[in-house]
Structures are given as structure tokens and as C-alpha cells.
Image (tube, helix red, strand yellow):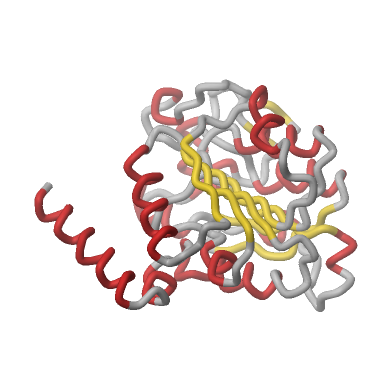
Length: 259
């Protein structure tokens, strides 16, 4: 414990000495590919702000947007130390335009959380549970973010499935494997396509980026077919020592909602 505290103090001192150091250390998953792609999209996105639901203080998708001076909100639930550390980091690097909140996000409080935000640039969500239902609620509230970044569940293969909504969803309580959560890539594609978005990038068999159709025209990005773009989760397969089909076999008898 003392060793961890000492390392964190050294980390803070490095940032204090060189504020840019944080942006060399903090990255997104998959060798920072999400962050790199999001920064490219930021050039054509009209709304210079973001909301990221589910983050770690040195690993999250929108870190590059903070570097680019976007306004933003980082939300996490049940990890107070994570949010405290993030607030300290932001104070040190002088990013007072970023809010950090410790809130359990659910359908009934989402309107209150988003009430001050009329135009959203990026929405990133990774909560290993109600991801699909939170995105659906954002769309039901008639909000129209320029970009959605979602973590899909590769263990659900190409089935149009999501887990049923449970306001206190915990994937390890639902199934000991932790494989039962979220939604498939096709499920996300169905709801977002219906609301005017196109799938433009899949990264690491884990994260998918959907762009407002009006903005797709301003890029040279290819619109992807979810069945063709689907990839198994590289990190997940390595961790479980099983492929996606074997993972699905573990949870196939549990309850799913077909989108």
C-alpha cells in the first residue's frame, strides 16, 4: 500500500514538473488506437465537448480531447479513489473545464445528468452492463451527439442481443464468468443506424465508433457492415483462453433481449 502511494506521488510530481507528461502516460485501450482515431474525428466535429461514462484515470477514450481543450464530463461509479485522483490530475494540468463525477448512471437519472448539455460532441460509454439501455435513453431524450464510442460485447457474436435492463447491473453477480453484460455490435448498430448513425470503426474486437451520417459525408471514412466488421475480443480471448464461440456457450442459456 505504501509503495502504491509513493508511486502515485512520484506520478503527480512528474505531471507537476511537465504537464504534457500526463498525455504521454494516459491512453485508451488497444495501444491507444481509440484515442488516436477520436482525435482525428475531433477536427470535423462541431460540438467541442464530450461525456465519458466509465473511465480509469490513466485509461479512457477521450483523453486526447482533454489535451485539445474540449469541455468534458468524466463519470465513474463506486470508485471514489479513481475520481479523486482524476480531479487532482486535472487540477495539476490546469484543465478546469473538465468535470469529474462519481455517479451511478441509470435511466431515471440520465436526464438530470445531461440537463445542462444541449449539444454533445462525443459520448463514450463502457460500464459493462446497461450500456445499450443508456444509449437508448440518450436517444429517447432527443439528444444527438456527433459521435458514439461504445464497448460492445464480442462474446455475443453476431446475435442482435443485449442483456435485460437492471439498474444495479453487476456482471459478476449475473454470471461468475463476467461474460454476460452489455450488447453485441449488431445490437448497437441496429439502434444507432435507426437514429442516423453509421459504423465507421471497430477496434480490437472491443470498441466501436458510430458517426452522425451528416458528418460521415465530410470524411473519407468507409461505412462498415457490422457482420463484416465484427472482431472477436483479442484481450478477452487471451484472458479466458477461449474463443468467442466458447464464451457464448457459457452464457447462451441466460436471458437476452433481442433488438
